[in-house]
Image 1 (cartoon, one colour):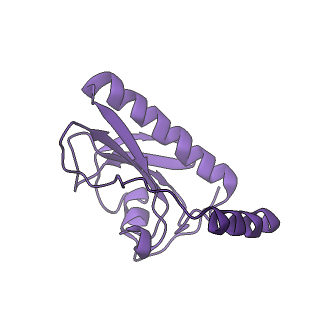
Image 2: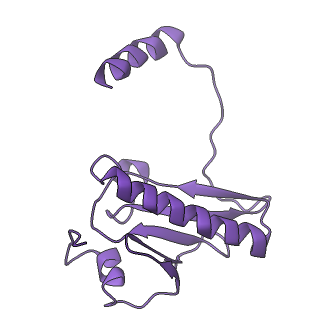
Length: 141
């Protein structure tokens, strides 16, 4: 299958073999490799081979393939590195912290007190606001 590419995208260059990576696995739709800026040892990425920046534009079947690849890598991380936990993170847009605008899932092994800031404090939401947004989203679906 031919996928869209972006000549300026670092992940497209990795997929094309123009930039080396520590490749964990590859299939028809995805590639997984070690993150060169890891939050913890074992941090890896599951990446779509085609260039789709965010979850709202990637074909559902390719997104499913990326999720399967992330799961395979996460299983290996858990079995081999035995972390305290694993975060799977998929960010969309700069406001969400996406640094490479090419759909990917981070597989992040976690350790106690590792200082990785992904968690937030829980606080009750405004029930009326939640219900209003629910109605808008439900209508959009």
